Image (tube, rainbow, N blue to C red):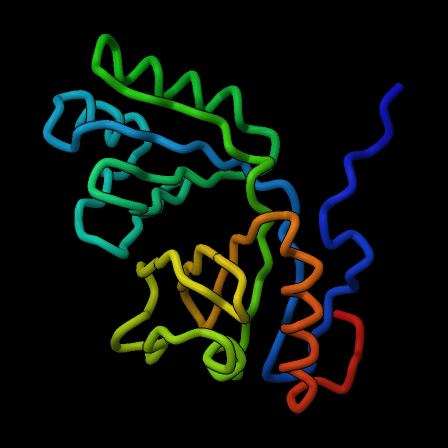
Amino acid sequence: MMGERPSPPARFEPVADGDLRIAEVSFLTQVNLRLDPGDPAAGDIGRALGVPLPTEPGTYGSADVDVLWLGPDEWLIVGEPGRERDLETRLRTAAGTGHVAVTDVSAQRTTLLVAGPKARDLLAHGCALDLHPRVFGPGRCAQTMLARAQVLLVARDGDEFLVLVRPSFAGYLVAWLLDAAAEHLSGQPG
């Protein structure tokens, strides 16, 4: 019998202190989708997901999954843990005979939640993006660097951000976030 799969920052205790919360969001389903956005399959896939594939750079749409724009012909579909097969099947069925690549990349990144009124300030310590809500508000996403680690940053509602990072950098990034957050946190477990 196999044991529980440990998450990359498994020894990390979530922290929360008034204006800031940092926690792991474990094992989200992540499926990479590649296709020509002009292909009829793109519309069929959007209907199957309940949200059209975003075509504006740096945006995402949400239904029961988040559909993040990664490039002109590439999206990352993010859903609840354990839905990899279901999501792959939905995408492949909707694509029909279209020229589409569907790849489960759930193990490629782990996800951290950074939330609260001080979240933007914390992330700005290590990220060159303009994170002002008028520029990088809900519905925006970007592949960028955070504290020298490549991440996919997702702005959600209510000063909430998801930070998707490769597992090999997760421990480093958690340590960096906690260090950079020291002025906002008293170290209380969340």
